[in-house]
Image (cartoon, rainbow, N blue to C red; front, side, top):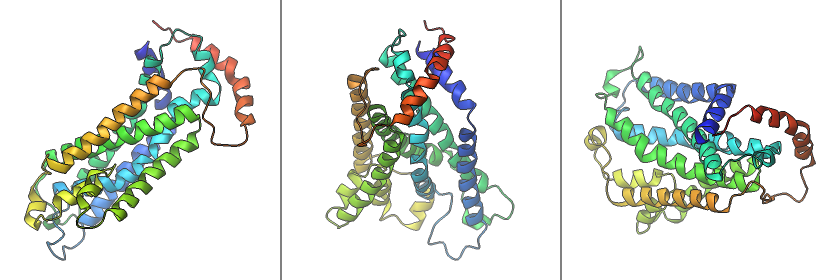
Length: 299
């Protein structure tokens, strides 16, 4: 049953032009940025090599801000589509467990987002291989720098924000609430950085940063240029505590979704007016979706 829903969702997304637009965008922006920066004449060595591990992490973390806005469009939409056209009431009549339903919806969105995020690393790498690149700006290729960036920052960040967005959209049945959630995460990160910017509180800013940007800066603030060019980020101290904290919050959020979700639940409304238009759409397309769903054979 889980695999059937997963395959159905994957086929749906592969037919959506937006997925290919996202792939081209994230590859293009990282590729062109790295190519342009690598082609500049090196004014000094103070900034370090452009493809050094720390520089790759900082660049990817910057693009990660844009990646967060994909989460409502992919992870949030996966479950919002059913609510928008009242398909959830039809699903409730089929022998689908909420574990299979929620897991398939969330995991397909998570998989697609992580696949799109791979384009950032690929774009950075390809940008260093283009004509006109000044080799003095670059060091030797380090595969572990890309691997570390992906597993320390991208996956935990997408999992945390994605689970939060999925929870908000699932219980509010409002896709705009998902976008507001992604914006709030960025605002909260900025506020924490401003409030905890003192020398005595920098550790707590690094500890409670939901995206790990302040954590990265804290871990490398005393590194020399030579260390920035060569060293990978050490997996210890506040970095481990920060990542474990938000991975634990992700698990708690997903557990809460499973505990409190039901197909016939009432939405948590963020509006004083009822959305009559969505109800009309649901009545119009409910029978059509029932016919489509009947073609799926659940085990």
